Length: 106
Image 1: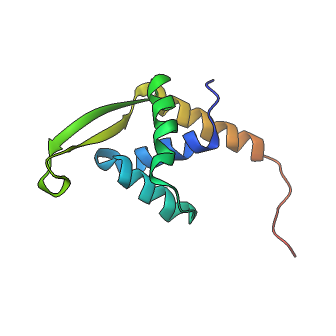
Image 2 (image 1 turned 90 degrees about the vertical axis):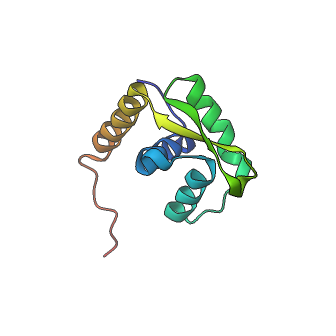
């Protein structure tokens, strides 16, 4: 099992959720929407680089767009290893929570 930081897990989950629309700004906005935490724009690129290095995601450039001054967006996809890592994390979390007393207050 590959051990991932919580930030890497959140980014993997956002990429999976966004599917074909997973590029830097969209990933950041999705994470902010889900967590309510404002992120600096550059704060997702270090974990994205680690995920690329671990071969849990792949990247490709999209077509140039006029609204970006002709620059291309870099899109991200989960690799089969990335999907496997995310599934392992979900199984681990379920196993860790199994049998825990309720956290609900009375």
